[in-house]
Length: 347
Image (cartoon, rainbow, N blue to C red):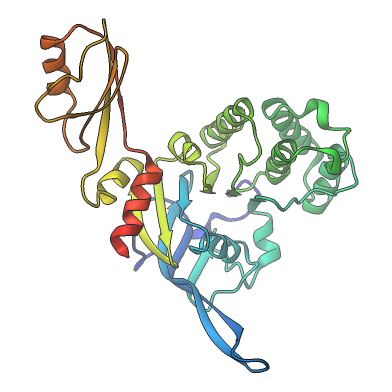
């Protein structure tokens, strides 16, 4: 049985033929796309009066599967096809081709049925009632989704506590800051216990403390309830702190689908580098260590770049043997830079 009481046979359809990161054959596949396409007809000016019709392929044959309980990052530049994919997964848009199922449901054909199985937070667009206090919006959500009162009160209490919404419940939504509203929208999306949560820029407008709180809440949600999360964001710290798997989309095509750690290797156009940051006991000229190069010296601190595929251990041993070392740290390549190199390599 699903958390909404529906039969688990909803999700039993075959997942053969999907591409990308392998999902265990015995896993409960919750999201499944096979060769999904979305083509838009766009009219563009071709002279003073005449307009010509052009076909824009926003999503171009994407295939992937997401198992129940996964937290997956879905990233790419603006216009890559991320939002179009999410809109097809929610039933807002109908695919032009291919096969798509969420919890065994065809979103375009059974959008209302699917609504009880998913939660959605769409960046700048709110699902809350603009002129009502936050708590009244939640009360309306309870009626729309026909949530039993006891379950509604338990879910609301958990969200209010962990997202720090207590002082905001009597405030009209239009008076909330963007960051406050985002937290309010996340709570609204979870009141009916969805199996899948789609998040589009969930930490936009949040200060550092609030971001930490939201990320911690999402980790707890996944650990305690097994909620499947598909996350799109430009804040790559969201990806690093929440996702073990990441998919990169560009020009409507899936460029990468795999473990977060493997993204660096996939993006190593030219030479991807890690950084060894050394704190010496005293200020010294740029040091010399085989296999690394000094890129910056600032007082007793020095930055050494070395190949991402190389181990830091020999470098650390060499430095410790030759120089008065006080402290050190190893910094991985910035994921945003890695993705930029991936796009450059496909250009």
